[in-house]
Image (spheres, rainbow, N blue to C red):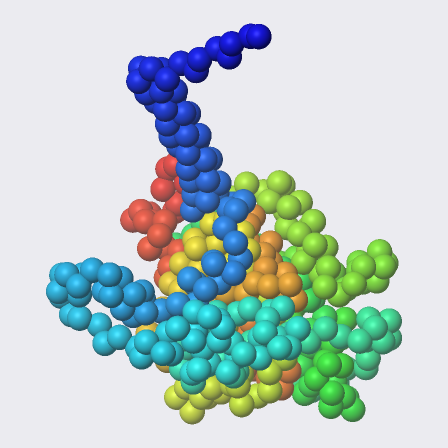
Length: 396
């Protein structure tokens, strides 16, 4: 009969095994934390953060976070210079559990209506009388407006007095502003005979491109070289069989070609008109009507903050010189909008909505000239023009 070999229960052997297991566990935990930290690091575009957690935290106000932290650390509130007034705890818990804010009906509608959150816009810098109810919108044209060219009324013909040359400063013949139109056929009801439906306000000639030409002339009067690209994007879409939502993909080809051909082009301005009606897109300054201006920034690319900063600068300058002309700067993102608008191609790229379907060319041109005025002020300050009026060495 064999005798079972006794188990070695010496304290040294048990302690050694426990130490190895503990070390392995610590190393594994450290590796997990390191990998998780790298993946979730804020600078990583592909963060593995659950969308539910990200949404909950992004929608939670700072006051709520103060209250939660203060519940665990009572010294936290005492360290703040001004103790925040906390929201009711019941409301805070309801918001965290449902992601619905009692004072924001949109937070509920966005969960129940599929298309409501497909487009997300944030009004970051609001102009006078601008709020979430009258933010800029765009309405795609029906197929008929791309195939059949409407007859446009040539009332006024969009003609106005020329722009006087008024500056000695110059970019030395270099074109630094590129003006283009992703929705180049966007037109205006006052120039379309018999058209009442805003979704039919499109025309191959009497359209938003005239406003871009006026902006170019006004910039050149300020010594700033500009190029206008009047490519018929809508015709290109029709020829390729592309949808209207691919307008920015088509215009991107033109922008990239222009940037490759001229290294001095550094400011990209995509001009549109809004689908809102006249009460939202018109303002009166010194008894004269102007078409309101809105700056749209796509937030679905790295570095969009630089474009937003540029837009905010122009908005602030307009507020100083033409109070009420700017509707503000807002970001757009979501599945039902482009989210980039080709603005990833330059840190000075903006989409500008000038006026709406009811505005006249007189009103639109006044606003284009006002925009050129504040742009030139921004540009010459930024470029630090020397006393000779030319771009300093190093800017060539």
